[in-house]
Image (cartoon, rainbow, N blue to C red; front, side, top):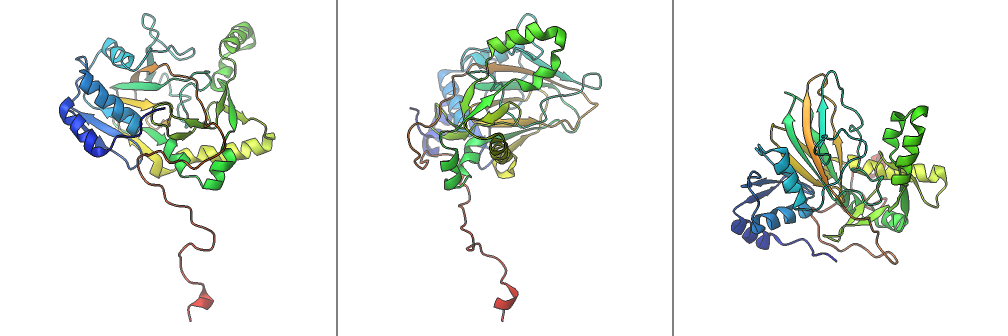
Length: 327
């Protein structure tokens, strides 16, 4: 399995050798990388530093990357083979590239919900790389949530409860696009993307961290639970992405490039800029099939960023004295 998170002393040496600076942005998630120019191929030292920051901080931000689509694709290809989205608006000559161009005439849709990209696939993407071309004067931020931190924030009893569970995923946001006349096309897509069962708790293949791996956009139900039980548990788990301490909010500027680890991060694109225009170019890197934690439950001991608050037992929380205790 993967290496544990490198300590900060080793990371500082590596950054010096690569001539780049990595600055953490939040207690649990996010880092901004300076000293990288993606118009040029990364050296092996630079790529290692960027890759390590990516898996450690889960979201990396690189400003002032005035690059071409081909250069963005080349950067993504360093991490693995690029994928093609079956529903999003792709470039005709470069189907790996998605153009997200929203305006008064094409209002934003489907992304103002916490989600992990494309978990309707048996092997969802490893990473997503998004670059800003046109940004509104105000609004249009993207929010990210560390689902490894969200998992660590659960009580031990809840971690035991969800250990070994699986959830069904489906491309449900795009089903309304198909009319009765498109039934054959829909059936073909259903054959190409059969509903996968993914672990509710995923094991990150590089860091070894445990990740809460359910999202509101694509999850349908949890295996072996009654529907009302599944709905109640999923609703609770979905809400963990909304905890501010686990989040990072990125304010876009032209030529800002953000890359996030789709194996451990959820994101939400704010739709507060209509009718202004917002144009992004996106590529995704193919991933592997999610794997859960095998065997009986044991407490998680893998190093990670930040420290979650401990669970406080009922009746022991400090607070104001009751009126009859004051005298």
